[in-house]
Length: 196
Length: 243
Image (cartoon, rainbow over all chains, first blue to last red; front, side, top):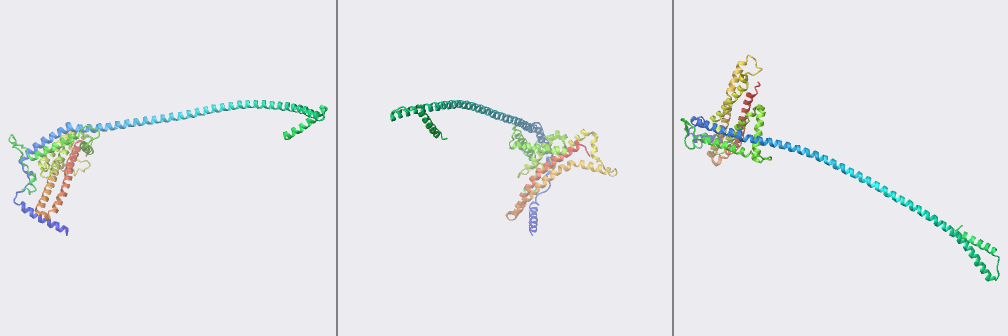
């Protein structure tokens, strides 16, 4: 249906245009040789000039540009590669240095600690020795003191007890029996004191 | 007058009549559009020669067309065709710009004239034949004797080959000329329909006209491409004789 309408339209318009153009003479201006020579002349002139200018001046420049761009890009890629390698090397060196310093620091730390520990040990040992000596000395003194004090105490006790007895009774008693009693008592007392 | 679809192909004198030895070489509208096309090509490509590593738009255009045509030549005619690059480049650009300038309304299409296309085609034909004979001497005549053909058929084949070779300039020129002329005539005819059918029925041919304009722009590019690539193929025959 639509096709039919379009077709009718076209046919109708063809008739219209034919009637409108029937008054004019047809034919192809291309086949009129009047300006052929002129066209050939101007074609040769313009196309020749175009060819000469393009091939002598413009196209070499364009190809040159393309070539330089290509070589520049290659160069850039090369330098980029080189620089990347360099940075990789540098990074490796950097890592190495950091590792070395770490190890060094550890060693240094360890050795210092060992030194300090040794020092502390030595000092402690000497101190302990001193302290032991002092203790032994003190113990000896104490022992001596103990001994001498007991003798003194018994002497004093005997004397005081003899004095007491003299004042109480008014006469001297045998000193040896007194001292035996005092010793006996003091022994008992000492045993009690020492918790035996 | 303007309704005649062939009127657009009329050539008329612009300015005074120039005659050398009684030969009329006056400046015509055809000459005008040849000059305009050539100037446009030169201006565009000259703007595209700025030396910058990152190209601007015109430079990109120039370099893309350069590599497009150089690829076309190396694909069809091989590396031996390198010296003819600038000729094929100018040829392609000239035909393309003439076709494209013809697409502007009220302009003139240089390539819609058989004499122009025929001169180009004849020049290519003669040039290719000379190149062939220079490169291969009389061995170039082997082009007419395809290998692997039975002896009985050989006389016939040779005649056909010679005719096909001689008809090359005609086919090359008529192809471009007829395409251009037919397209422009058709657009003109549809334009005439728009006027004669008026506001009621004129919309349909108007749509056709719009569609045809797009088609014609495609054809304008395609015919320039075909013209250039056929030149490359003929050049290939002359440079690398393998039959």
